[in-house]
Length: 224
Image (cartoon, rainbow, N blue to C red; front, side, top):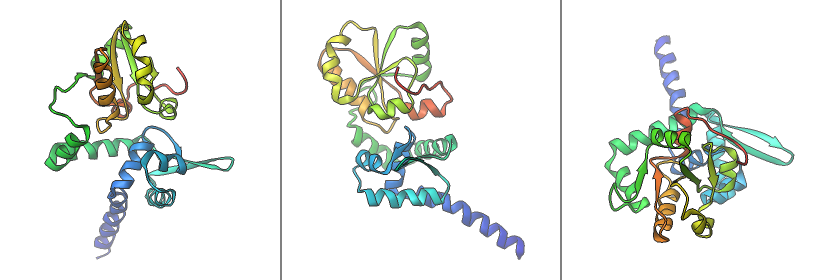
């Protein structure tokens, strides 16, 4: 009986972590925190949620030991408790995409993909070789704070809203590749479409910063 009670308690505690992931709003916050630490206000702006809503969801994640905080003066910054939390999120997302037709359909609708060949793709291995050879112009189209928190070495920050102003400088550039947060992020798709519409041939990384980081590939912080 005592063994049964201990087993039940074990799964009860495991379920706390599962429940923390069991909210679409909390999953969105985890996705954002995988890019770098943020204050509650910054998370609320990025996610389009109210500050009180974000605070409540962060407390659930904190009670499950999935996020941590640090104080800088009057500001409190939230971050993922470790790379293993990002790994867990990435694995859950990939399983859902593979096993759930509803997730795949929702993703296709969000990205507005007419098909798998809607834009050219570059794999992580291919991008690594291109960076080593120095024959790629790599655009990180995420917001500046995410780029500063961690980016692919050799990339330059070109937020999506500034991309049209960069078109002329990219016309004679070597192979142009764009990336953003991950495979559930639309910004790199939009960047390739904007560039293509302006006559600049570009491709996108097959996934993004989340997968690059969780694969153990090099990450650089700060300005390039």
